[in-house]
Image (tube, rainbow, N blue to C red; front, side, top):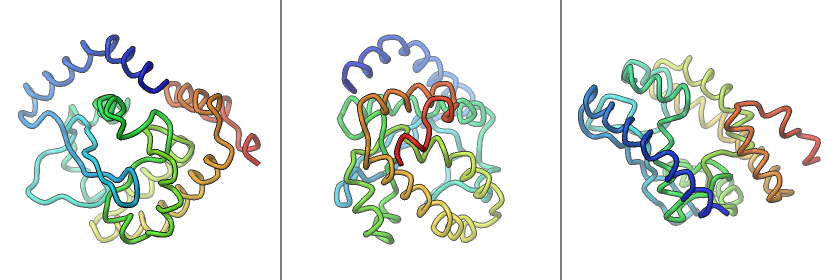
Length: 203
């Protein structure tokens, strides 16, 4: 089903993909894509693709927080608002690195720091969207946006975000169905999780 959907979307969305790539190239320059190593199992990593939304720096690590806000480009701000920066991940789905629905693939550094947590979370193939992404994404953005240093961002992400998202990912995996995956996909498109997916479905 992932393969069928991704082929259909690539056929429909290729003009948009090319248009965004050209926009970034003209306004921001190279590179058009941001490539980040993420983990699909506790041992195996892969190159996650996104449209670049930040200015380039020599060294970049950890998640994005308030300490990186001034690096977001004007084009990148628009792409992030509508999650268009994640469209290149269709190629990751095509390659089999991730699925449409699943836990967000973590950076290697967090898998190494919290092996017990991610050993459980990564029993499922990572995905573009999932229950944790839908329910906790805005809260995570708010918490991290208030961080002014890389150290603060790291501390908040490890203390508040990782445990909560892992709990939601594990909860969803316990009673995951094809139907619930489709409901989450629809919820992601319309950015409304409550009418489409209710926590009581997984109690």
